[in-house]
Image 1: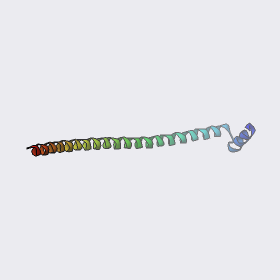
Image 2 (image 1 turned 180 degrees about the horizontal axis):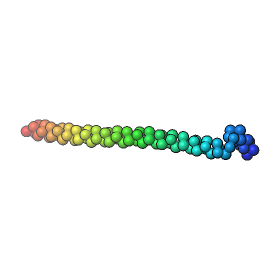
Image 3 (image 1 turned 45 degrees about the vertical axis):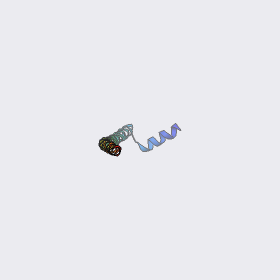
Image 4 (image 1 turned 60 degrees about the vertical axis):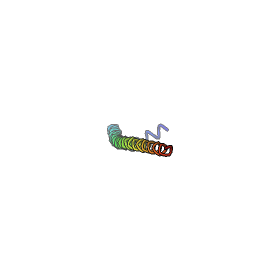
Length: 86
């Protein structure tokens, strides 16, 4: 197995320097791709956080509206019951 690896290495690279350059280039490409992917992922996370904040705001607004409606309905029911008693 090791002999096959050495043979493939020798076929692909004439010198150790070429192999080291190939490794360095591959690592640089990997780092570039990793940074790009991390940046895209960070943008997606930021968008999710923004949408969650908007959602939380809308939920709070809706809750305030529901609280107001409940208060008005309670008042109207009490007023109606009072009128029926009299």
